[in-house]
Amino acid sequence: MMLIRLSIVFLAGLLITGFASSARVWASSNVVNVGVLAHRGVDACIHTWSPTIRYLTEQIPANEFRLLPLNLDEMSDAVEQGKVDFILTNPGNYVELERRYNITRITTLRNLRHGYPYTQFGSVIFVRADRNDLRSLTDLKNRSFGAVDKAAFGGFQMAWRELKDAGINPFKDLSDIRFLGFPQDNIVLSVRDGKIDAGTVRTDILERMAADGQINIEDFRILNRQISENFPFHHSSRLYPEWAFAKTRTSSEKLAETVAIALLNMVENHPAAVAGKYAGWTVPLNYQPVHELFMDLEIGPYQKLVDISLIGLMKQYWYWLVPILVVIVLSIFHNILVNRQVTLRTRELSQTNYALEKEVAERRKAEEDARNLLDEKRFLAQKCMQVQEDERHRLARELHDELGQCITAIQADAETIQELSKNGDIRLVTSARAIWGVSSRIYEVVHSMMQRLRPSALDDVGLVETLKEEAHAWQARQPDTRYRLNIADNLDSLGEIVNITLYRIVQECLTNIAKHAKATEVVIQLGIVDDGRAQKVRLEVQDNGVGMKSQSLGGGFGLIGMRERVETLNGNFELSADPGAGVNIKVTLPLSGTEELSRH
Image 1: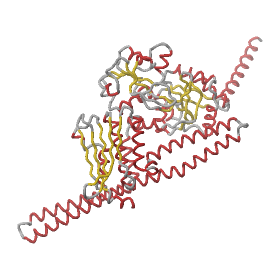
Image 2 (image 1 turned 180 degrees about the vertical axis):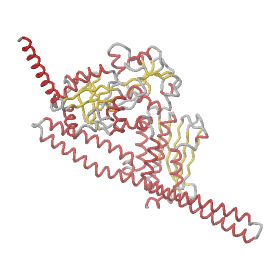
Image 3 (image 1 turned 120 degrees about the horizontal axis):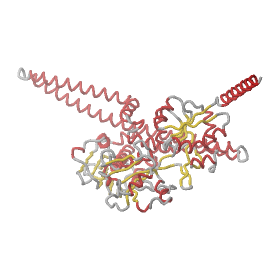
Image 4 (image 1 turned 60 degrees about the vertical axis):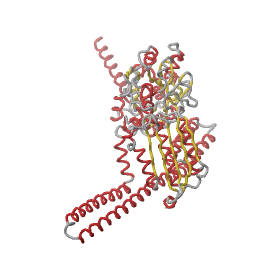
């Protein structure tokens, strides 16, 4: 009898266990996997981000959110194979996944540093303060350098971009580059102890170590020091947006909206935020600067940028490239025919004077045709330039008129919703604020695109003021380089084609100086000269940088583009440079003859 009772109890336990298991399976049927970059190891990732994942489950009880700690390779595989619905990762990894798998950011982390929240960060490049031989990035050639990892965004790639702009290839020009991994404190201590000459870490590491008593920050010198408003930490690079929380293709738009609202509603002192050492979340920032870094370094999704750009250019301007190609083919075919005619007539020269006269006439005709063809090609090049500038102008105007009005309307509606919902649902107010913030970010991106397509100041205040603004903005980015701008007062009626040509040339010169010249002084002179036959506008840009080798004077797409612009307007382009003596570029454009092109 006792055996029968025990059997009944055992069977009842099995039934109860089965029902409980079924209930758990049913309750977790809506599992949402969140992949988090475990850049400091799995244990640290679980400790830091588990409270945030639990917070999402509490706020959205219809779903069970699960944390998946992943390294960089695992993150890419998980997104590609659809194993994760959301990801939380650094901006560099986010941009690579966005480019490859079309993921979408929904919020940006507000990182808590020294008691204050920040949505941007950068990197700092430093040496020991007593190293008087190391005062600029160019002094790092043939020196040892410490970083986290080649794929570390804040721990190497930000600094890599700044070194590249200074003319240093870290993989060729440094005597030794050591990737020391985490924690980043090891890099700082290695520089302090003289084990390596210089190093880079993400912003706030130096300040934190100083606050903890590990180092004296006065023992270090910051190279390429940058000053950014409302950002108190030492930094040598441009600033980039913080980590992104993004949805993958397996997540629905409705769930993504719900998750975004839940994260945006998190208060700064929530236990999940405290555990993660952050102060909540904000609307998704503009990650275009990260794209630009990858494009500049030709890494990540932009490793074949040159090929992609060439294909894109051909697709976009095929209707101009085809006629040019046809003209070139016809020109080659025509030259072949002319050479054949010349050869045949030369053989017949001894036969008759009539054949000689005929050959001379045909050669003259061929030369006249060649001159006509050259004039046609020059006119076609002029029209190509004009069409390109007109298209940029039109795109900038449409972005301003159409998209700008729409963004303004969205912001107005968002403010109205906030006003009408002050005493209503707090989620509606938060959503309205998020809408207003997103629209503001869109406006910033559109404004940046408009400036790249067509500087609005050129139409609003004219060439002189536009060049002054361009030079001033350039020096703000190059504080170690002085510039002098000598511009005449009688430059208000040069015509659009001359204005845009002079502006593009100055813009290209300043870009080349910043990247290659290592100059401390730049002089820009612009005025009208009279050579006794006609008035011309004359531009001269001179720097005192490292100069160029004579065999390099004809190379580079920038120099070729400037020369082509000038010659299509029947102008004169001169470039003189010697190693160690700087570069001097002189441009002379006629004032007559360009008005015709401007009208067309």
